[in-house]
Every structure is written in structure tokens, then in C-alpha cells.
Length: 113
Image 1: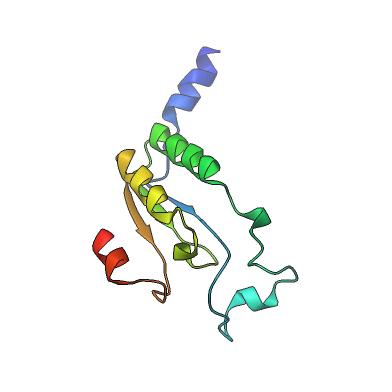
Image 2: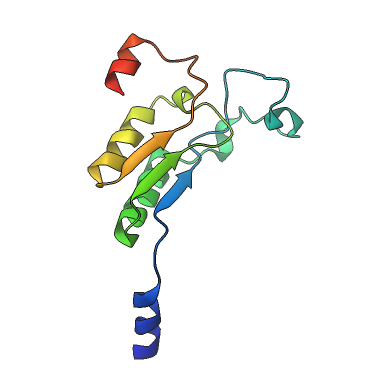
């Protein structure tokens, strides 16, 4: 058992973890990979729940991850809970970035960011 524990202690966590909050998008760009999917990517049945994302964030924090990148195949601001996710990352002492097409941003959201 000691050998296993020594091995686990020597494993280094990544500094950044990418989480895809959604594949849903408010646009349908001609060059987007989402157009080639057989199943409609706007269906939310495969989207991680807020609880699942929070668990991932907690696990990342426990491993020593420093940065969470919220990106993926969709528009992050489609999620009604995106600010809760961002705040949870910060609450867990990590920095956060996200990818957006910016079409759903308004002055209130920009100020909040």
C-alpha cells in the first residue's frame, strides 16, 4: 500500500481543466462543427447538471488545479446558471475563463463579469 500512496503523491494535477458547460448555441454558423452532428446539439439531455459541474470543480480544486476554462461546443451564456458556475470556480480559489460568441451579453452581464 505504501508504494501506491507514494505513486499517488508523485502525480501532478494539470494546471488547467476545460469544462464544456453546454453544446447548445443560439447561432447556426455555416462553418461550425455542430452542424455535422447527427443529434441536435441543442438537446440538453447530455448537458452536465449544475451539481455535476460543481463536483468536477471541487475535485479539480482538491487536485490543485489552478484554472478552469469554460469552453466547448456551445454558447456558455445559454446556461441560466453560468454565473453560478463562474462564482463557484472563484469560490474554490481558481481562476476562470470562458468562450462566448458574445451575442447574449448585455450591459448588466458585462458589468457582472
